Length: 390
Image (cartoon, rainbow, N blue to C red; front, side):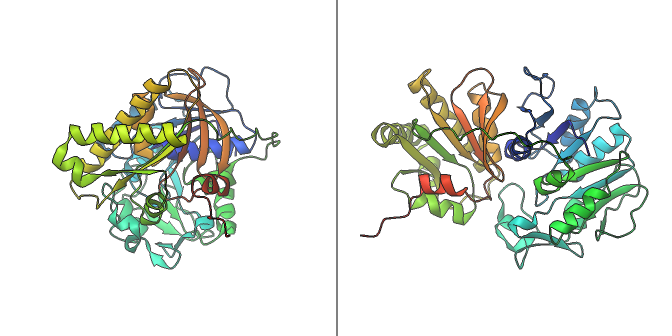
């Protein structure tokens, strides 16, 4: 299938798709401004609609607004979260209505990361989805492993109830179908069932199978890792936070201190981070302590990270530097704070981990990673080197 446009609901999801297309040799442009045309010609445009954290009604309205100028024959893929966080049904329904696609085929799972849907139930490894850390997500907690229940009511074409089907099940003529996916053969089977009358949606693994074979370009070499570096982590995944906690370059942001001392705590933290970058050419920043169920807490953390990135940008002026960002909401806030909203793809390190170069200038480079994904081996070794035995 030939695709030329992707709508993603957050920035790391958009990066994942851009990286897949880049590795396939496609000229790819990523934009956080859906109404702005790319500066350079591109074979694929990936748009971050920033709808992950919106209500269903607001997300549908935003998608409908951005889709207004799209022709009904637009070759579009709707990138969703691989574990179905966010207003997935509302967004896909709005697109299906606008593009006049009776059938929406949603395949979110990624067997390469042990994310499977079998019999309509989502598992990560052997664990039901809601019993993994995704069940404790502070903004989008998953409360069941039944994919139909996670999605809720569908108000696009066809029946109001989504359906879960195996790869070779009989497809209805209209509605929302969530595809069972146990392995890569299931992904390939679902890709073969997408027709021009279908709206394809789901994760990066499904998108990979939908790409038509294209000549592979010689991959660009990775950017050097010797520039001053700031790694900002907004993830709440325990394993990812533990990596940062044990690094000698870590500068934690204490949620308890932030709650008690406010601006004073932020100022002290910023100074510690800048000293660490000047001393060792890098700092790794993460959140320390239990994340409060208060819905305002993630927003306060994100604002603190964006504020820190602005301070660092002022310190470096036009000198080379590199931002590594873990977590979609964190990445979007920082990119906006620095006035960088349109990018080309510089390098794809691995699944979901991509280095972007702003079209408005060479620095900073942005390397983005979903909070739940592991660091690719070269970056893991760079930030978390294995102690030598002696």
